[in-house]
Length: 331
Image (tube, rainbow, N blue to C red; front, side, top):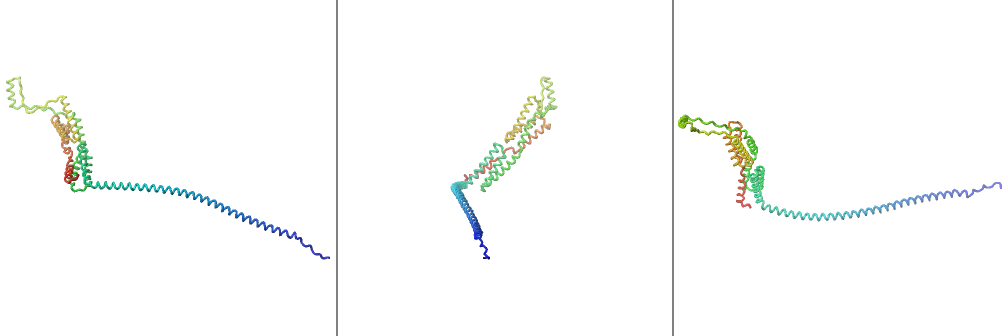
């Protein structure tokens, strides 16, 4: 037969692409599965890591919780101890308050007597400080403190004592303002310069009267030169020997120094005696016409005119307080 059919295509050649296609599909599936498995493994590993971290964090949290519980227990114990201490303090405070209240009640009962007694002590202190120490400043402070105590007392019965204290304060203030130290220093300076004061010159004898002259002539004629009588009404001052001048200066110096010491110690009797003796000696034995002698006499006159040399008497307020205290029955 002339016409023959072309040979049929080989089946092996047509099956190769199908096999290759199936093989590629399986590879893709395998790759997808691998990717999925990898994702699953990654997810599982992440989850496991999360669980591990969570467990570790929980363990840390539990540890911190245990520490917190321990600290809480310590704080509770400390708080309990503070509460006990506060209770003890409250009890001590209560006891102290009760003691103070009892003391206030006791003082309140005797407050009037206590103030009066304190005032009396202050007046005694003022009197002693002025009399024995010549401390006018401290005596003034003691009198002021006594007046304040009477003001706190507020009892009209003791108003006369306050008025007497006011009078004594005025006298003490005037005494404190006296410059007794300066005056005593000037007397000491005067005592140091007594050797420079000029002595009084001898007084001339008085001339006899005509009748006396006649008597003298008769006696002269009778007795010749055996006896001569002279009568005068004035005593002639003899010239002092050097040793007599020394003793005069030393005695005058001692009198002036004693007057200065007595002034500083408030001894008016000794001061007046020595000052008057010194003035009399200056008037009798020294030249009162000389300016230095006149200045010395003026200094002594100024010292003698100090009437406040005698210390103020502070016994009035103290005696009055004791009298009123006894009259009103204050213990």
